[in-house]
Length: 400
Image (cartoon, rainbow, N blue to C red; front, side):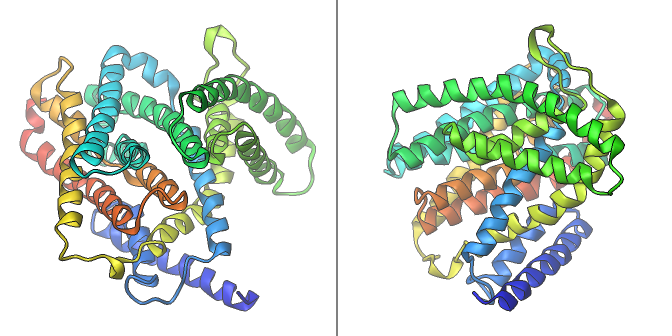
């Protein structure tokens, strides 16, 4: 690609993503839906103006890593401890049920391979904490008991999801499912999660010192982005996906993070806030490129929409995706209204589900039809719950 063409592509992607995201927000839908639709419009599915070329893919991968950094930065581990056993039950059941049901549908009902079925089940385990927080915040229920349970469960879901992603990544590059490779990844991931936060905390002290004496603006975002990229490289060197490094860096630098077993490094609240404030524009610049890239990679014209497979596949997985999270919420002791709200709040897959699906596509695990079906399920589970929750609170909120 010529340099000037890449500049034009990037300009169109950024502006179109912003316009569609603004429209989505005006329609009370998550912004990620607008950015995904922007890719569908610009790509081979509709206009065919932009192809998912390597240069855009590289920027999208940076967007994924920074997105997981932001997820880690906003993860509140203490919240999970405070909400206790109820969040643990909702998270574990909401993780296991969609995984088992999604795998079973793919493997036994649709006759797909073991690895494809595992990727399908893995994609359905996700919960988008960003969308969940936004909906609860809009409804002013973030601090309510059911809101605290949901947020605690979503934190654990994120951690479990990233670990599962590391396993699936190893299976995809290793050519199949292997207990030896799974054990190796678990050891590496465990060591990484123990050592990376300590290293990140220590490095952040050095960054803080130089930031205080530097006379040139921009040192903080430069060094933090460098730290995130280093952790991404380190994660890959240990046999895990690069985005695990982004998540670990964000988790360690979070002002709400604490190290286990009482080993804690002092967290400067003001410094942590400055990291969030100065990194947010960079994250919000790159992450829309990832969501647009997902849309660009989807060619809806190649799908046989008259085929019963695509409709049966999408609708059955949508039912499993919804049912798994709702059943998980029914396992705890709360008023029935609260349990329904908790289940609905855990349904959105959003950006986390898209990361799973994109890894499946890039690895060659998902065919175009299966990838399209997964994106349809992720889009519907992301789009519908906010509207249903607002209606539900309007009719039954006085019973909570």
